[in-house]
Image 1 (cartoon, each protein chain N blue to C red):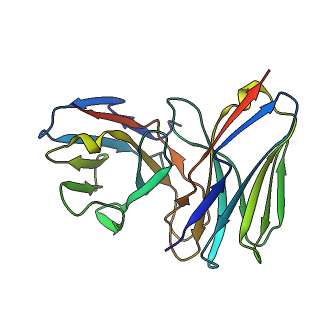
Image 2 (cartoon, chains in turn red, blue; image 1 turned 30 degrees about the vertical axis):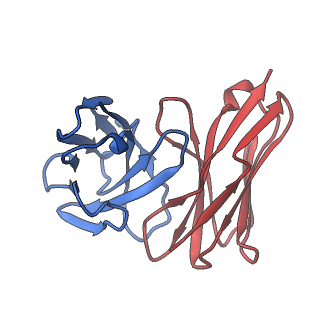
Image 3 (cartoon, one colour; image 1 turned 30 degrees about the horizontal axis):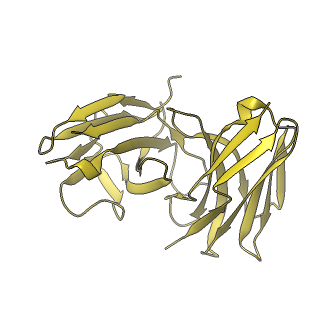
Length: 112
Length: 115
């Protein structure tokens, strides 16, 4: 089955700096890659996603890139703010199935 | 348009008791997924259901765990004879359709504590 690895597990950045989280996946049939943000005591919230026919997608301060050949994708957060502090999860899904496989998560701390 | 509703938010059970977790999907969503999250860990897939059908239960433990999504009413995740290792946050998510690349919408979770 699909296996998703996520790095780093923790990331501490100064407010205003950029944060980058990287994920790799194992199944070349995967073609949908969402990112979720989970705040303490809450459920994961979808923040951005990318499909395999696109190499990059941007939404304000958040961007995601996808390299299908290398089977890795990344989340970039620019101009970080304290409210960006949370746990971020990447995930992957095959076209033929509906199960999302999640990475292990990255705890991001933005220091004011 | 209410989101995915899970209840209860917190559930305490003694070892050997049964736990029943409920999930009402978003309006218009007919697909429900259950995930388990152990403390400081990621989300592990348990089961995927459509109305009256279990589509994929590859992540469900072989014993004590069951799930249903009846024609009427919420989806239920049932854990019989709970043990301490079942303590976790259980999240339900829903999506509008099959075979489409749509993100899930997650509920706020049920935090199960077994004492």
